[in-house]
Image (cartoon, rainbow, N blue to C red; front, top):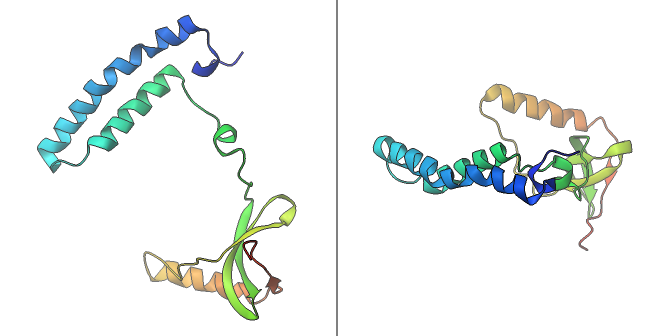
Length: 142
């Protein structure tokens, strides 16, 4: 039987809810500590963390399939030369199971990196895309 909070009888749920009344005190303690040392601005974050910890103690959790069940499963991505409306672009292409194209990231921000080595690796991956076949892509929203 599943031991998660959602599948328990009412008396087990009631017993596990004993962790929730502590949330304000845990959050206030953290808020006071941060305000004393770093200034104000941590209220919402500390409340969420305290509530999340209480839910973990209650075993009130969800699996990733329950949370992301309707989203497509992305196996991998790479850069590809994409032809759209007669123009060629190097874009990120995301693939699902069986190597089918799930979507093309059309709002590509450009080349980003924390240092020169990261930029170089990104550019090298984009140059590799020039050796792959051109992907003809028509967005769904047209």
